[in-house]
Image (cartoon, rainbow, N blue to C red; front, side):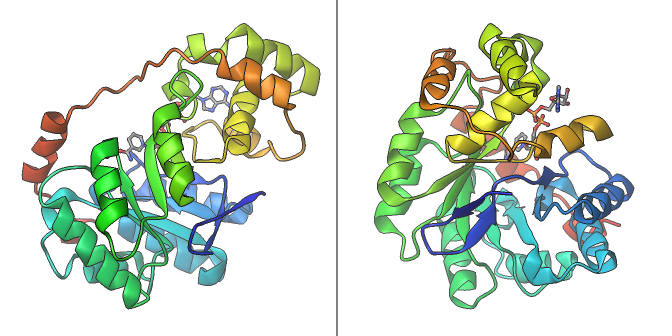
Length: 281
Ligand code: NAD
């Protein structure tokens, strides 16, 4: 495993698993099996309705809490609820999370960020981030926040490497967690000739070349898969390195296209989608 040192010194594994769209039972099995396989980064969210299951799996795993990097996200409807972070921690069965995101640029996100800063100062959160935020709002946070953010979580892959955003991140030493790291499984992306060529050279799959490109670009990955062979392969990317020339060849496949084009107006609808997080199993 390789690690990213965040701009506040906290260390984060560069590969892990996400539990988006998994029901509580699937979540518990998937987190338990990941922890048994040595995976130490877990990404969930209030809105995934499976935080309790993540907490159960961590408790059952026998892995020490401090050896796990736990990421979750606040849903926009709780940005103004002063109990939201304590309730999140209670569902996860932990005293702190390693990284807490505002999930969407919606609702009163400025209040949400302030609440995260307070929790950071109280030791309940080790690093702060925003997910899916437009660059202008991220810049506002960087300029005005007392506790500067450590991470963003956004769509990123070789067709949409987030070149503009990465310049802003570089100025403040912030890192990027890439969602859709494999382009949501798009065969056109995965089968680009440059990946096939490099896969042959290194004895890896095309997907492994893409994931290696992410890590060498500084991106933290948590690729989705229900296929056990793929899950194993997706972590087996730390025994080879792409050359600078190969990284440049991959940069040339940039199409500046994303798979999920959400506008601020789209995101605002999340501020009205109230969920009963306490009701989850
Ligand atoms: P992904 O790019 O990881 O694509 C996954 C798909 O790629 C799989 O379904 C499978 O079809 C294919 N695949 C996976 N491993 C492969 C391999 N080794 N070889 C060939 N094909 C392979 O995207 P995803 O799973 O849709 O998303 C990843 C994570 O992003 C999710 O777990 C979710 O938590 C996160 N996400 C976050 C947000 C957000 O708003 N923060 C939004 C969407 C997704």
